[in-house]
Image (tube, rainbow, N blue to C red):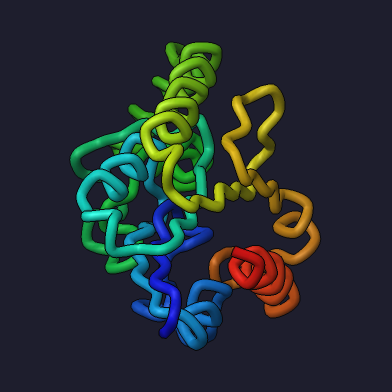
Length: 195
């Protein structure tokens, strides 16, 4: 019987086949395991927690959580991406808004990030959310991953940082090229095979 895997998180773990041709590491895992993907492109850590809370976790043998940037701000509707099939639940991040300053709401967001945003607060809250996930779901088989600089943030159990893989293997599916997707797939498959 195939292991039942839940994949939650951000765009690094979303199913990009809804919009693009190609196969990411999540699709590769789907070929050998019974995989449910609830990850969504561009979401904040808060929405990742909501993804996990929305499901009955007892039906999954393992959970993979792709943690996002601490600098995403949750919003009900993104001013640029609400109609995009891959990014429909996207949250705000500075780089995305900065690239679209011709949009009035994006410009307001850029002004907020540049003049009012408290990055220390964002890091503090993100750290609390990581601790919350680790504590709340400590009895579950979880693989925690990220593709972002993690610095001094709390490291949940079974934590893998793929930041170097991402930087060296940027591409168009899950932000990775074929080699990058293969590295992530091989790493996670090895862990799943040993549990």
